[in-house]
Amino acid sequence: MADAASSTPAYDVVIIGGGPGGYNAAIRAGQLGLRAACVEMRGTLGGTCLNVGCMPSKALLHASELFEAANSEFAKIGIEVQPKLNLGQMHAAKDESVAALTKGIEFLFKKNKVEWIRGRGRIAGKGQVEVTAADGGKTVLAAKNIVIATGSEPTPLPGVAFEPGRVVDSTGALALAAVPQHLIVVGAGIIGLELGSVWRRLGAKVTVVEYLDRITPGMDAEIAKSFQRALTKQGMTFKLGSKVTGAKTGQDGVELTVEPAAGGAAETLTGDVVLVAIGRRPYTEGLGLETVGVEADKRGFVANDHFKVAANGEGGGVWVIGDVTHGPMLAHKAEEDAVAVIELIAGKAGHVDYDLVPSVVYTAPEVAWVGKTEDQLKAEGVAYKTGKFPFSANSRAKINHETEGLVKVLADAATDRILGVHIMGPQAGEMIGEACVAMAFGGASEDIARICHPHPTRSEAVKQAAMGVEGWTMQA
Picture 1 (cartoon, rainbow, N blue to C red):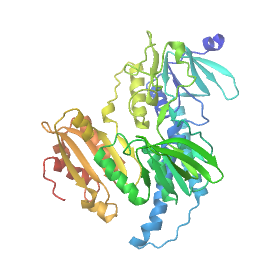
Picture 2 (cartoon, helix red, strand yellow; picture 1 turned 60 degrees about the vertical axis):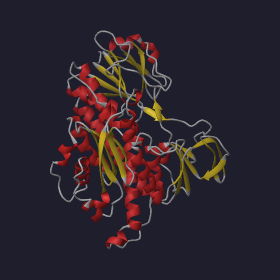
Picture 3 (tube, helix red, strand yellow; picture 1 turned 60 degrees about the horizontal axis):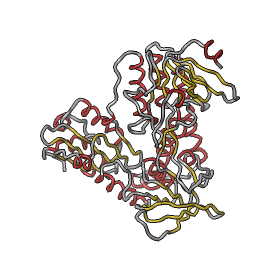
Picture 4 (cartoon, rainbow, N blue to C red; picture 1 turned 90 degrees about the horizontal axis):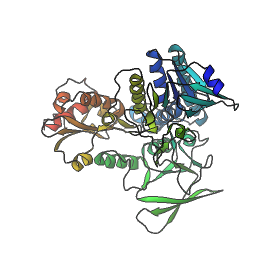
């Protein structure tokens, strides 16, 4: 093993993991002239996000929205059709898009002179990464810097064992061969609600079981209540303040034992498919952290100081980005980490403001937010002002029959600096970028309020909400 390491010229950086954090780190390293290698154990690059997460879920969200629109909306606007679901073709279209995206990363690696090392990476000591190939063969790479970018995996639920096609995680829910009659989703977070909405639109009855007394923790409470009402109106059923204590699979489906979280009598829910979506945990199994004196915390996260972990020595060391360390467990956060860590390795400045990482739920309506919620501002004792504007008063949303939702702008009561923006409505994920830019430059609500927005667009709702902070909303 030592011979293999000594015979390999040292890489400036070896990245373990080829997801959004890993592949962007590798590309940026190549751009800056660093000799870089990316170790990825999948047969394709892109990690969870491109292969079994962000991208395939958006393909199914888009397709299922069109299917529902064809069934319920088209006739209202003069388009008469009788749509028929071809789930196999829907999956094929999804897979084709995913394949194109992963191939695109391979092209970018070649363009930027990044080496893709196929296999499972493991830190084997300071400056060494051992790679185990699919055939069991081992190679050791010498690295001046090692970047841990191994991402995360679905958190299992104690007492509920995964079973293909019956009790599934998010990966399994993206590949169901038939529309469930009754899908039970355990967890009312972003992943559970997105995938639950896909299968509801395609014909499933959907019941969501959540331990907390609210959905989507982290979302502004007022927006979350409006969001739950919208999903309930669409046909989802919610059992909040409930915990799942067991599961039994039989010929008729899966029986879940559910109890009130505060204590009380148990009940049984039966569905033909159960999706466990209670969150994700860092993927560090077998990573060899102990060989460089690194220890993950009880939840599996690796602490860092500006992406450096404690084992760094002179001239380089070990770094960590993305879901393996603290901050939002989001693909775009991992991408920002990736750029920052490589620029630090290259001797440049690198920083990510986690307070300005937006979150998006890609349901219909979408929900997006950045910055503080009202509950957070109250807890911190910050005096703030609020501006709101409903999409029911936005001309483009009214014309498009997508009036559900609102925009909320929170601004400092003394300085008017924007502290948080929360959007529930059409294209919320696209519109939140304006708020991110404004907040990154320390903008005030008046800045957005006095900037000309194109008419008619949904973005005017953001402008009108900003105007509302000072009480001069004009269109509602």
